[in-house]
Image 1 (cartoon, rainbow, N blue to C red):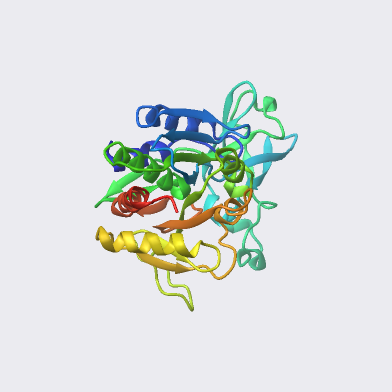
Image 2 (tube, helix red, strand yellow):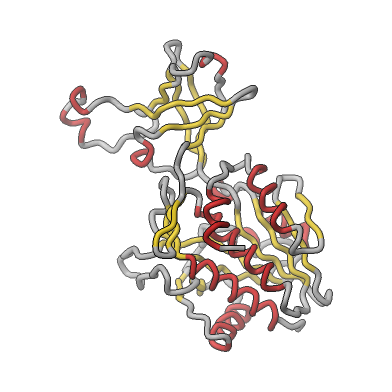
Length: 338
């Protein structure tokens, strides 16, 4: 399967936190020919299992959910207000068209904002909040059928590729989902002792239960948590992580030291270029919860460099997605029971 095509396909499907079923269903259709079995947890995470020699269990976890909105208020004259599902910056959505998923049908709307001509001078300098943004839903003939609690997604954000770089919505974290798929492809041809659990988890963007409940169900010995991190950004006090320079291996108290050393050794053995990211405290990813499951899981965070995080168009390089898969596949092939 072509990596670019997978990135564009998965990033085009709406699946905000708690409403990921369309995405997981599409991934299941892809994964079922690469693994031995697929099933769902009670909170909607997709678990696909590829049997090894049964000498241990390792999980590869990537969250499938993305940012979205929920309608919080509707006025009598055809305007609606929203609350964000996940960490939106309101500046990025002004003037965007949206699709509203209501109970019986779909509607459209536009994020409106007071014209600059009508703003007070002091208001022009303020950063807008969702209290001052509204959805114009009056364009819909039956707009009164829209209800508080309906889900809202940015619409017509179409991904594209240039020079092996993909620009698309929801690459946080569909890029990591593609890396899991590519890992499964590779493991069809590679012998491995451990049974491998490919976990496409739900609700990460709201700190939800998708990853830890799936890890608990699988009773894992090891876990790779795959997410994204800031690429091509200058952060004071930290070494710059670059796009197209390889997967990013987390180091610090949040990851298992022996597992981390194994990953670094595999990268050298198979000539996979990697970068490092110090994580001095909590990582802000599913790593923090997964390692606490049951008696503890030896966990390693691997991140794909991404630019423009939590905006309508995010940016990743195809090579980083593929090399992340290679690093995981070869680590799994080298992993032995202690």
